Image (cartoon, rainbow, N blue to C red; front, side, top):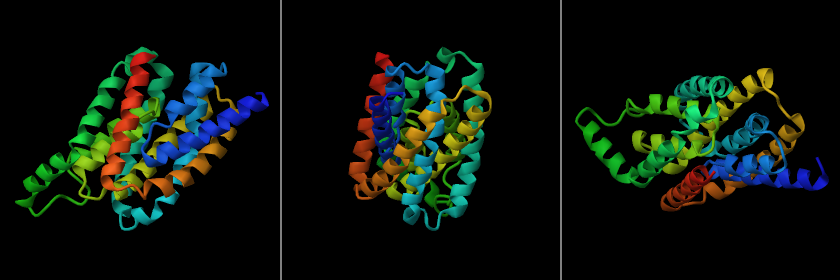
Length: 254
């Protein structure tokens, strides 16, 4: 890699780490950057996934204040992310790309609709549970399988994984968006870590790219945590919708 390419990939890693911590979809920056420099698509995908793991951890650490008191909830949902991320990574290695990416736009649209309608949906869900003593601490019944499904998608590709996670958590768990964003960062880290581990063992990885993206994503994770926690609920929801819409446009135009 030339010096220009190293700097470009590093900056892309910083941007991706920042966006992943605030919303998700940082892959939409790093993945196209690697393709533009001639990295084969599969190698770019797996190297990018591994490289973003430190950034996901950095973002989760940056949100540690919002994670206080949510240990059991995070551990329970992390199991779903672990299983889903494992399945998604295996699918990437054994299935043709078109077999899975055909449903990506549908998933993104669904996630955006849920995010936009989240206040009304959450209020309706809460009213439904009032008769039985309130919403369960771990969320409604669809949260765990929803996180599992999102993990499958995240292990396979990952772009807009955060949008989908926030849609699932925001409609099914009775918490503020900032505290849910903290959970989202942990779950994304789990998915990226297990998928990255599998790719490191069986796939063609460019470790120089992993190192550069990893350094950038760690820096970006801390920037994202600083910026993200200052956004009001409406601002965070707008950010999610904007990034998700861009992700949808990229998928439809490529």
